[in-house]
Amino acid sequence: MFTRHRTKTTLECERARLFVASERGTAMIGVIGITLAVLLVGASMLALGHSEGEVVEYEVDDERAFWIAEGGLERMRGHLAALELDDPTADPEGLTFAEQPLGGGRYTVAVTDDVSGGSWLDAYEVVSTGEIDGVARQVKVTMVAETFSIYQWFIESGGGGYSWFRSGERFEGPVHVNGSIKIDGDPWFGGLVRAAGGLTIKEGSNPTFVNGYQLGVEPVSLPTRQYVFDTLRAAALQPGGIVLPEIGNGAHYEVVLGEPTLGELTYQGYDRNGDPVGLGGIVTISTTNGAMWSEEDVWIRGTLDGQLTVGVDGSVHIRGDIVYAASTPGSGPDPGCDDMLGLVAAGHPKGDIIIDYTTPNQNDCEVHAVMMALQKTIEAEDYMHHALRGDFTLYGGMLADYAIHLSQYVDGIPISGYVRDYHYDPRVVLLPPPFFPFAGSFTIVTWEEVVPVVIS
Image 1: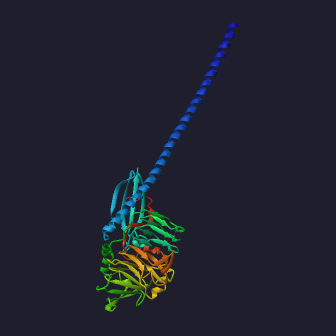
Image 2 (image 1 turned 45 degrees about the horizontal axis):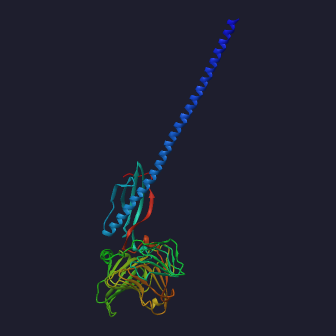
Image 3 (image 1 turned 180 degrees about the horizontal axis):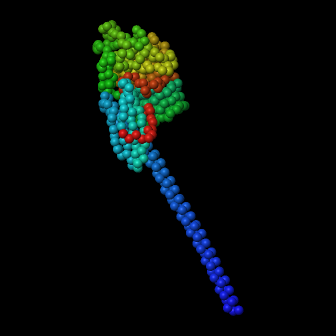
């Protein structure tokens, strides 16, 4: 009995041992399974993290490559501006800055095409490629030379007390003074206002700056007389230009736009006594290159059908209204108008633009033009005397070395001269007056990204 009992106990123990071993094996398999699962999840997360890191790194490099390409554009923009000032006749087509380091990467920028289309205004297609860590972005733009005609109002000199802006005046375009902005009343500025000096606002004034103002900017210099000679006068001396015969001894020329018919002009010289000199002439504007030059003062009025810049080694006198053929009186250029006039007084010591006190000008005066007085002022003749002459309506711009005087004010109210009615002509960005002086920069008028990147 004893032996049989012991055998049974042994069997039960063996079964228990096997059961425990089985349970341990099952548990071990579970642990191994869980461990493998954790390892797989960890590996997946590591791979996913690495992949996401690569995505983030690529996105950062992609953004950096874009801004490196933009940096290349700015390099070329500055170079073209310097080249235009140093040598206006230079041809930069094909000019390339290759593999230039910037921001940890490199850019290659090139002038790929001259897109001036036969115009006197320089315009170029520029392509810039930025690259960093194998990631590349590419942009293509059109850069156009910017002329001084972009300004609606510009005074080079510090000007003392001559840069006051008053109630009723509206400036839709850019304004720049190398002195301070001085406010007396409620003028309205739609474009950016820039001043090398500060800002003075009389008590009670409430100016409106739609696009803000910048103070303490770098002064901007008007072109030199020699530069105008080397560009505008040189263009007038070329085939297709107009050079009025030199008279001398205090003479002047009278130029009438739109006579004998639209699209033409007449000119006649007069000596200092007012007697005619020479035979005069008739010019069909469309047959010219748009440049006209006179060594004598020019008296001008009429209706312009075409594009013309009149440069004078002396002063320009406005004898009556000067308007575009494709315009509405009092409302400026009509849609689609392609008429454009520049007046440049480059004389020394006298280089003024004067709205003469003529019979027509005593009852309003309307001028469609961009006017530049290199030596001194733009002013209404005898503006401090006589009764008010009505409105001076401008569609274009006025740029002067020293000051712009059109009215005499008392307590902010005009008492003589003109009530000023100024309007900007935004066409001047792409349709400036022919051979109007370069302003020292290129503006980007079209922009696109090239996808995929083209490697030349």
